[in-house]
Length: 165
Picture (cartoon, helix red, strand yellow):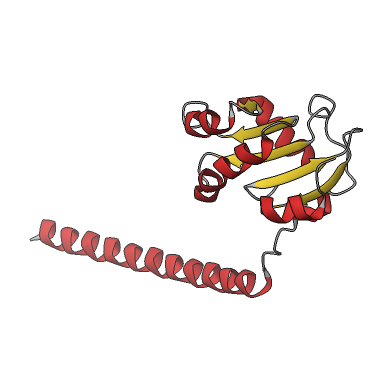
């Protein structure tokens, strides 16, 4: 009989400990939920406008390009606009910066590689960070000094803003 009493007391203590821990977890969940709701109400994403790049100077190793396209392997729109970029890049100094894993970038490199110099891997990441590119695809038109004269996410609008010279 004493073993039964000890067992019941231990089970009771375990249940009490479980109840205390569960109440602690619920309290923390309420705090986190309140914090997430507070953050969700105040944080809004500002739309990215690539025209903020106008006037900036391209990095030295990119400065020779007159038309620059930034593509990302995970971007469906990039795959759609790559042929348009390739068509516009014919006959001019163009550079395609493809960010993402090299094996995944093969499709984009194949489309734009015949008409533009292509940068992938770590070099692409460095250029994207240097120019602070936040949206893909982004297209830039630069003057002979490497200064960005037009930038947009739509190549048609870019050509209309600053025709090639």
